[in-house]
Image (cartoon, rainbow, N blue to C red; front, side, top):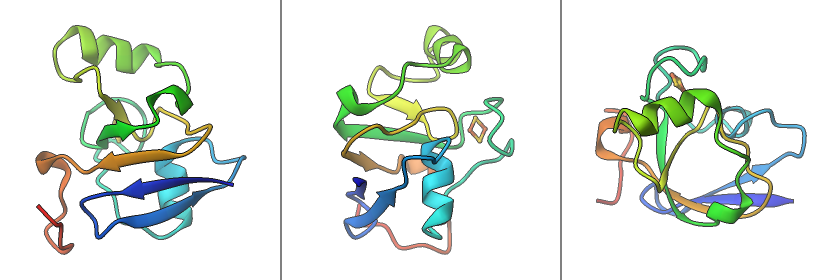
Length: 107
Ligand code: FES
């Protein structure tokens, strides 16, 4: 089973079930709190994650991600958790703007 390691959340390891429709769904399955202001509809960028390793294991960018990238709101190493699917192991970081006040991050 593929795994996501969240580097700045104490190296939390999240198992990815093959049927998870997105990284956000996989995080929610494992009860990891993650910001998602538009409800996972691709209409904001609050669920953004920074991909440290495993970019090649991600699904193709969705039209929403391509649009945000063209608008300069997503860097080449950033994806939307509600849009991207993990097809293999990943290492990610939570960006500053996505940090939740009740969680303790390592940076
Ligand atoms: S939650 Fe809004 S784009 Fe992902």
